[in-house]
Amino acid sequence: MLGICVMYSVLGVAAGLTGGLFGSALQNPFVSIGLGVLLVALSLSMFGVYEMQAPAWVLDRAAVANTGSVVGIFLSGLAVGVIAAPCVGPFVLAVLAIIAQRGSALFGLQTMFTLSLGLGLPYLFLAAFSNLLQRLPRSGEWMEWVKKFFGVLLASLGLRFALLGVAPALAEWVLPAALMLGGLYLGFMEKSANEHGRFRLMKRVAGAAGVIAGVALVVQMTSAHHRALVARRARRIVRGKQIAILLRDGRSLHAGAALVVRRAAAEVEFRAVLFADPAAALAGYDLSAAERAALTGLTAESFDALAGELEARMSKSAFGGEIPEPAARGQSL
Image (cartoon, rainbow, N blue to C red; front, top):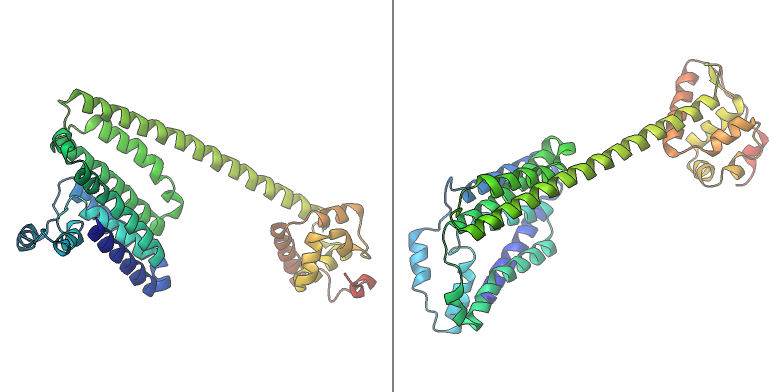
């Protein structure tokens, strides 16, 4: 187990450092697309399209390794996770690709060390309780279902990374789609070990749970998107009302309100005071009650729109030159 942990930890740190060397290049959409294609290609191995296998001579050397000494056992542990376990090879490579994309050696160490613990714990448990070996289920068709489960997981991750580079808005929908489609496929369409009643029941239950979770997630995400849309519309309505109050008869802003907006656009400090303490910022300006209320309720978004409207109208000589500054301009805020 120690050898597995050392090997995987080194691989994780190396992947993190390698990714960190590329820096911002890994944020390029084409990198996300490439990573997504890689993960999808690796997932095909889980569906039997091809098989990742170490060369025969490497496996032969690993089989005859001296396991009678501590060093031999340690060296065997170094190789078992990468060379002698083709079933986890695509998954390990996918995890390493994700670590490289993050570019963090610490994240790589934590991730791969945790993964190595998960892989090595069964060996440690069986070594301590070797009499349980006879009770373990024999490998068979049920293992094919497990491989396809990981294949669905890798394909979903790959699709998500690819969409982050092509259509980021759609990437968040990969998870509910994977739960629903994966649940249907793994629970009801995949035929491995269907002759075993208990395993078939487990597949049905797992598939149904995935479909239900996916539907619930779609409902939740749709509701959240609807609330966000309503909030954006409300903000646009408020912004429109604020601008409408400050605009006068379709031609220009009232002189006092225009001065406030122009000064806030030019002076960052005054703008901060206008948002934080509008009463102090507007003291001394000749404003109507409606204008004062509208300026008090300005947000950063509505202010930007209002300032842009003012500049557009100023460019058309709506004011015809400089507007004299009020006495409040010189007061301390």
